[in-house]
Length: 234
Image (cartoon, rainbow, N blue to C red; front, top):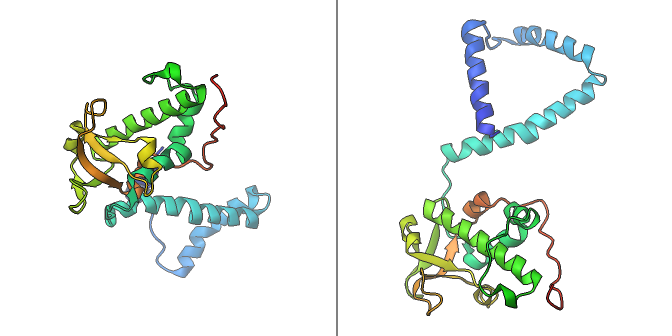
């Protein structure tokens, strides 16, 4: 359940209680104490360690519920500024190694779409290649929907410009290992269908907004464990 729905429920409950059942905010210190007295009595009667239990309730409210509620409300009050603060290669490699989505795909046997020339690859290369292809496909869906914004230079000399979501129907990012492991690491957007015959670049030096990428592909608590590549074919 998303936390915003909990907030909606609390607002609705507060309205119903105040409108139909006479719930009101205490007007002074004495009325506040009198309103809390029944709660304190009930708490002391049912909690084995009332003070310790109250401490943990306070910790939950202050460190879990309120911060999560604020994280849902803040984007509507203070819309975040989207800016290109991470290069495409770094963002993609973080998804492959640290995202929950990558861990789920690699564990649950969902990587069934074959690669080209799989017969020449080891089992390790097949699994990693299928994972990267699946993540790249999902990444492009986010680009087309506008949930992830990308920036690129049309020719490598002009300043970076925002790439519109509709442009991703004609171009795609080439997440190849050679470019992503070069110095500096980078990826380019190429015209769809041109990689086999020679890439035609649409934009170069692609960059993303790190916050958007992590919202689309949340990070796991621990990085994905990648087994060492075997010496021979499996």
